[in-house]
Each structure stands twice: as structure tokens, then as C-alpha cells.
Amino acid sequence: MRGAALWQLGQSLSRRLSNSSNRPKPRFFSAAAAELKKTALHDFHVENGGKMVPFAGWSMPIQYKDSIMDSTVNCRENGGLFDVSHMCGLSLTGKDSATFLERLVVADVAGLRPGTGTLTVFTNERGGAIDDSVVTKVREDHIYLVVNAGCRDKDLAHIGEHLEAFKAKGGDVSWHIHDERSLLALQGPLAAPVLQLLTKDDLSKMYFGEFKTLDINGFKCFLTRTGYTGEDGFEISVPSENALDLAKAILEKSEGKVRLTGLGARDSLRLEAGLCLYGNDMEQHTTPVEAGLSWAIGKRRRAEGGFLGADVILKQLEEGPSIRRVGFFSSGPPPRSHSEILSSNGEKLGEITSGGFSPCLKKNIAMGYVKSGSHKPGTEVKIVIRGKSNDAVVTKMPFVATKYYKPS
Amino acid sequence: MALKLWASSTANALKLSNGRARATFSISRSFSSVLDGLKYSSSHEWIKDEGSVATIGITDHAQGHLGEVVFVELPESGSSVSKGSGFGAVESVKATSDVNSPISGEVVEVNKKLTETPGLINSSPYEEGWMIKVKPSNPTELDSLLGPAEYTKFCEEEDAHH
Image (cartoon, rainbow over all chains, first blue to last red; front, side, top):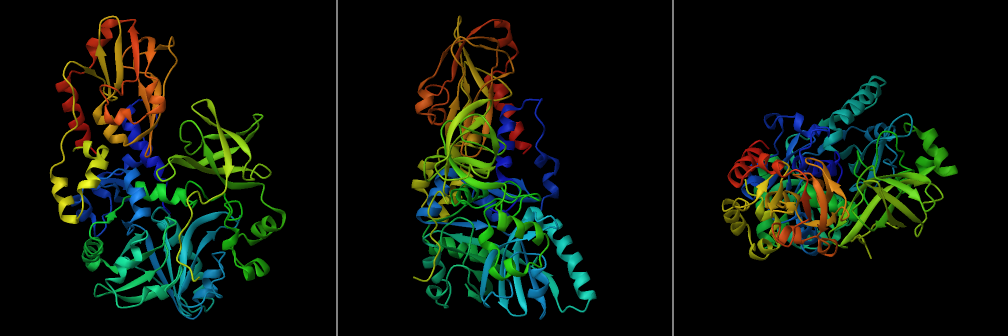
């Protein structure tokens, strides 16, 4: 999932169990419950047994009554419905929207066909990632973006600053932050059949990465065939006053098979799918090349540059990065972020950035950064957890095969 | 707030076939169990005093918070533990938790079954899911621990704060 470090959240729950005074208090406790923002579905989560936790300034369900393990598996076998309204949707409008955005992201926005989108990265002058985002070209003069909740303030300040400068030079672009809308992610094999029951538009003609404005359950929604679980599915931007009805309709139409699914399972799902969690697996100092997202840098962008940090990134593309994000299978305790990675002869190679027990594979999976040269699948390494070395092997990602709906 | 239902989720999942049923379950959440005859620590370990040795594990409340345990790290037999210090760790899908010893002493036995079947901590936290047996070096330390009623109240208050 894209958002602040989720597993730290789990850790904060567990630290409460050990309650030892020599450990730092997780910063999540600093925000009083009263200050947390609530989504339109907040009460619905609570009614359905959602265990609400502070997450990036929002009160969000980490899980419902089923365990994270069951919830993760159910999403892949049937389907999961996630409230991701904490994420920030925004629209850029005006004929220069694509030109403007290309200064800030690595994607070939101008080259996107209207009604399609892609994962992209906002970069800084040093080529580091400010955030990852899904960018969609609605029309030539309308771009729709979803950025991480945890990065909202930083992203909006960054975009806003560049927007003012761009407009001052006569650029035609304005923005709108969709705080009037809620965002639901419907993921898993039942996503399409269930959603089809709620719309007249033919979803079988809509492929991974595509975008449509359409009526769902009688409300005007922005629909993107995307997600962050590795499954086929959709993200549905719905007017907030209709969000509860839509969530209920989806659950009802699935006859209970699609279940409300919390941030805990969402983290397991994205990890199994080998997807980065911004704040863990990608940070200000990580470039998209190091993070294994070179594929997201458009061909034309590689030739032309023109985005922040392009000099650093294009050089890395040419020469290869010095560190790379890779996946691991490991024995022993599940690796967690900051576990040290050593070569088989004890040389420090890097650190784990996300890890855990895979509910679907029933074994430990992790991702982290290693020095180039030690990044090839099959490379045997050690992961140090609480002072003990555990066997691990560099593994191709995704760990669980993705099932995106693509034209055959 | 009750955490036990999270842990017995498989059973729930089987029963939960539609939204209406789920709502009913949310009302019927129950408190996790606390056994009489045991002592408890505020870091959620239990200890059973059997004279020359004491058995230690984590409470039902703790396992409920953690969710399905996937790995248990235990000390070696013969090593020493001290009151309030970590002797091992419990890993769940969600989180890692250090486990502290409620008393000081020497580890005389560890529950090797947990290596193969860490889920015993969820299914039987007070019986099959025990973690270590300790020969106490200072039996009076037991007196400072919480009784069942005190521990139940402690859990309720802690949950009310979060």
C-alpha cells in the first residue's frame, strides 16, 4: 500500500504489549484520537468490527473481525473492499496540464492515451522520490492523480509551488483537490463481476490502467482499473455522500464474499505483489532506478529528461545504480524493516525495508536494498534479526503472481 | 474492547456469510480470558508458580492483539532471565513483540513444540502455548505481580485508552 510505514504501526501495537520503558514511544500515539480525520465510512468500519488505528493523521481500520491472514487470503480468493479515502485525489485541468506535470514526474504523461494511466514517481532535484502516485489522463486537458495520505501536505506544497511558477509564466493549468470525494478500492477475482452488477457500462472492455467516468449504483464515479494488491480490481472515486451506499451495495452484491479489508491485509497484499510502500521501500533519497521502477520512466522521458533530478536518474539508467531493491525468501523470524542484510561471508550489503510472513505463501518474504552485484535472483545472503543471522535468498518479485486484467 | 474474536477469526469467517451477520458479531465481542491461579505482568505475560519452577507464557489478551503467531524465539535451557527483561520474541503477521520475564531465574525448560507449531500460542495461550519454565532465584518477585482481577482491570483500562 502506498502510505506511511504501516508495519511500524503493527510494531506500535506490539510495543504496547511489551510496554518496556527503554523503547521510544511510537509517534502514532502523539496525535490524540480527537485530532484524527475520519473518512465518510468511519462509523461503518466501527459497526463492522473495524479496529481503528491512527494512520497518517486519519483514523483507519487496520483489520476487521477476520485476522490479517484470513483477510489477505480472502482478497485473493474472493475479493476485498478497502476504504482508501485517506489518499488524496486531485485533478489538474487546462491545456498545459501534461506539460506542467512532466516537470515533476518521470512518466510520459503527454504520451498517455486519454482514458489511461500509469504508476509514476514524483522526484526531487537529487533524483530521489518525493512520492509515488497513479496518474491518469482523463482528457488531453484533465489529469487525475492519487497521492499518498502520508505525503499529502508535502506533495501539495511541492505541486502548488511549481504550479504558481508555471502559471506566472503563462501556463494554462489549475488544480482541484477532491476532498468532496471518497476512494474505495475493490480488489480480487470478484471485483469485476460484482461491480458489473452495479453499472451499465461494459467492464470487460476496460483493461488494467484504464479510466472512465461513469454511473455506479446511480452515482457519478471516477473508475480506474488499478489497485495495489497485485489482483485485478478497481479504485472508485465516489462523491462522499454516496460512499456508504456504494460500499454496502458492493458487499451485498457479492453475497458476503467480498469483505471489508483493512490496512493490515493491504500491507501483506502489496508486499506479496512486490509493490513499494512509500516511506519504507522508497524515500526521499531513493531514486526510481534503485527502487526497480525504471519501467515507469517513459522512453521519451529517458531521451529528453526534463523532470527534476533527471541528470542523476538518466546517469543511473546508463551506468546502473549502485544499490537495488530486491526481494527475499528467508528462514527464521520474519525480516522487518532495518534488518541488516549480509553476504554469505559477512560483508554488509544493505537493509530490509519491508518484510513479513506471507499469508498466501505461508513463508517469510521481504524486500530491501543490496549493493549491485548481489542483486541477482538465487544469491544467498544472511538477514540479521535480533543479533542472529538467518539464511535468505534473493528472489524475483512479485512473490505472488499478479492478475491484472490485460487484453489477451 | 474484545480482541479474542480477531484471533478466532477462522471460526468467524466460516460463520460470516453476509453483512448482517457480521454486524451482530460486532456487538457480541467478548473479553479475552484471564485464568485464576496465575500471576500477570503489565507487559502481558502470565506466570504459574509451581514451587521449584514457574511456567511463563503470554496472555490471551496479548495473543489476541498480535494475531496469528508465525514464529517464536526462545532462549536456551540453562540461560538466565531477569525480571522485566526480554527473554524471547513472538512474531505475528502484524507485528513483533518482545516477551519479558516476570521474574528472575534460570531457564530449565523451553517449549520446543512452539518451533514447529507457533500457533499454539493462539490456540492455547495458557496450556500448550507455554514458553519457558524458570527456576526462580528470588521467589518474592512473584508478590509484586498482578492477580487475575487486577490484570483484567489493567487490560480494560489499557484498551480504553487506545
